[in-house]
Length: 265
Image 1 (cartoon, rainbow, N blue to C red):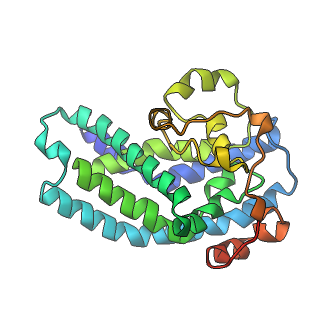
Image 2 (tube, rainbow, N blue to C red):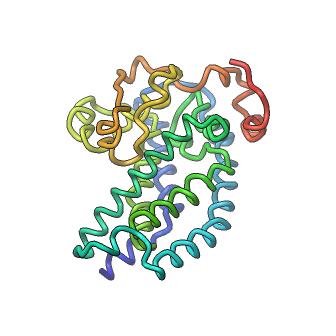
């Protein structure tokens, strides 16, 4: 139990930075899946989003921790009424957070107001490891705040479980966007259960039929169970959104204001 607590307390922000530094370096020297110019400029356009995310994450974390501790003190949630070993609760807890995140991700695509913010992440026409950074800072209240509090309230999770989830999920968040070639056998084996990079890239296809699929962050099984799984060969994927195709619409300042303006396709 002590080991689990220590692992769950590792800051996922540090994990993300280390992984992005590693994979961004590999993207410069290995055969990439998608070719594009101005990679350093692409990184510099995405990095300011991470700074805003880090600040917002720190500020919002205070409220999230307070809310989860209150729910725990009042023993609210399903796991308080089921006697299970701690390790099983941890495994189930991680899976349940991922399932709730799946449904929130699905809502982000189907609720117009939320989509206006979430599409900032989907706007990237030149995906690489730095795409992990690209997300509107106001989205953090939807993802990190509301989804985690609701998951805790439904299932009776604690901060250790939440921390463990992000230690596990953060490598997925980064690697899913990496611009490297991955063998198709990964999709045909591990891809039955977890989200592989090729399967996540389908979710970033310009075609709305594919954009509205493969929502799961860690366990692709949720898409398979709830009927949103789709496959497209990586070579046939065209990334981004049609309304953001112009280079001027790829700049940090434009993307930051984009949820508040009308954008023609």
